[in-house]
Amino acid sequence: MGLIKRKTKTSIPTSNHPFMTWLANFLAQINAFIATGNAPDGFPYFSLRALNSWANKVAPGIADLQSKWTPVSVKGTHTSVQTTAFNNAKKLFLKNILRPWNKENVLYNSAFTVTNHGNLGVLPVASTARTVGGNALEQIIVSLTPKGSCTYLIGCKTSHDATKHSSPDGCIPQFSWDIVDRVAAGTAQPAPPVGPEDCPFQGIETHALFPYDFKLENAGKIMYIFFRWYDVVHPDKSGPWCNCITINLA
Image (cartoon, rainbow, N blue to C red):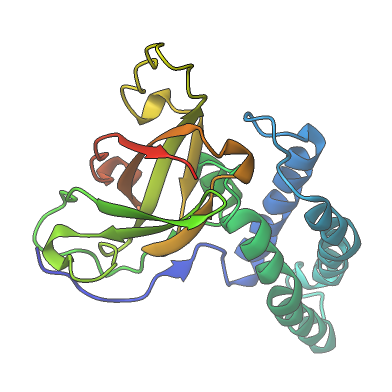
């Protein structure tokens, strides 16, 4: 299967009107997650540091940008000075506030599922160049290397390019896992999950080689994990899940 190599780009719109619509949705959804407090696994969606920076930096930055956008948004009534002020404020807001906060607290936040990321509008999307030679995605090849304290270096490869960690064009690794207690000696361990749909935790990653922290408090437990290639433009064309991988967390 031949590939057209090209970069991915963020799904955050660049044009002013679509961007401000996206930003209003992002603001509402993040506030809803904050109000909810904990994710389904019982852990908070955001750390105290993230909440503090949201309340004191990001949210005020959004409010300021929206105030500058109000006069500019009405065609024919704004001045060039107002437009310039908005465009300059938007550029600085994206560079210094939104993108760093989004990268640290949303894109790499395991509390958010792929659906959450899609609704927030922060998944990377492919350009118009697509994979050549068929739509079927191949099986993902995965390695997990322990780094201590239940952190693992996860490497993902394709069968046609197994000499290095790489992703099919327009795809990112998706994983689903469960962590269970080890039963007492002499007792049969419960059967592993049949498939990824039976696992309570989900994650995505934008790189083919990445570290992942499965939490030190889970040391000594058993993890069952599944991986596949997720097509960020056409989710229905995502690749098949790999067989269940069993890890003794350490």
